[in-house]
Amino acid sequence: MTRDEAEVVLEAATELDEPLRTAIILAFYGEQPYRRGAEIMDVP
Image 1 (cartoon, rainbow, N blue to C red):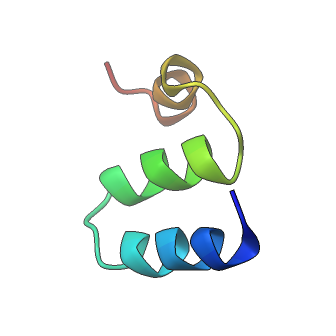
Image 2: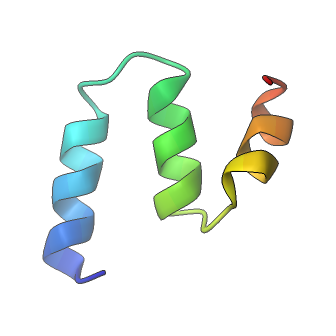
Image 3: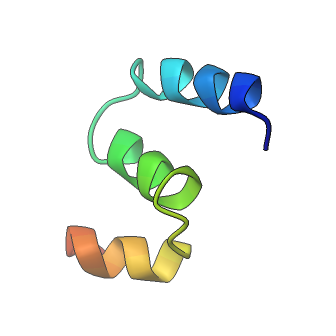
C-alpha cells in the first residue's frame, strides 16, 4: 500500500463507528490478521 492509499484508508476509518474503526486500523496499520484483531478487541 502506498502512503497516499494509507492516508485515504485512515481518513475513511475515522468516519466509522467503534469497534469497526479499530478493526480496520489493526488490520491495515497494525498488520494484524482479522482473528488476532478480534482477540485484541475481545470480540468474536
